Amino acid sequence: MNSARPSPPAATPLTPTNAPLAAAAPLDAAGADAARQPGIRAPAARITGWDHVGIRVSDRDEALAFYARLGFRLVLDLPRHEAAELETADGVRINLIFNGARRPGRRNVLLDEPVKLPGMTHPAFVVPDLGALQTLLARHAIPITEGPHPIGPRRIALFVRDPDGNVLEFNQLIGGDDA
Image (cartoon, rainbow, N blue to C red; front, side, top):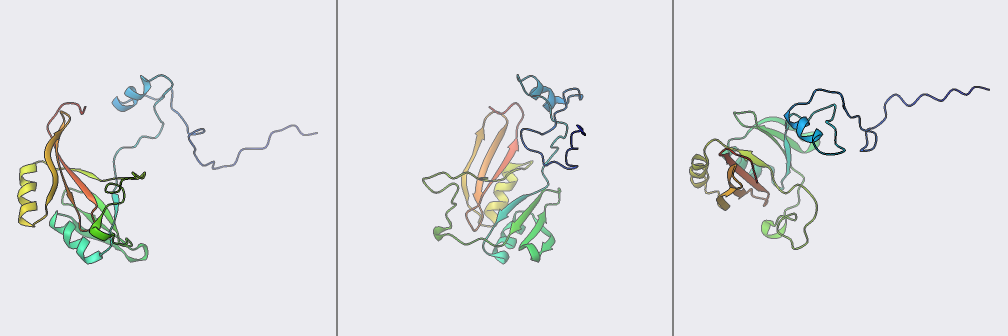
């Protein structure tokens, strides 16, 4: 009788219960903060930044023109995926997804409805000069829907909406820790 256990599958999908932890790995500042919390160890694989955020829109041409006014340029058209990648001169990327259905009054289902559904409510971009952004917004008749105002001690923010009602946050960082 063979009592050998079967080998585990070569590739097991990671779940919260089997994700590897690096208890002995050197910790960077973020990992050190996590390691100070009881029962939390630094992950072996680190998230080091964003590649892009996807923004669903209803009108391709209108959205491309709006985001171009904010400094984004089309770098990759993905018609098979009904999407396009846009990028700023500083390398900040967004994907526009062109399969959205326009809502009456361009209401944002995640922010404007009384029942708050789970989901990503908005991207938040960093700008070096909020005053220069305000000038650009005024020149292109893009209304500011909130702000500018401080959010904690670290940033001053203002908000706008795209033609579909998607919220965009712009922050000028001013130092300190966010409260």
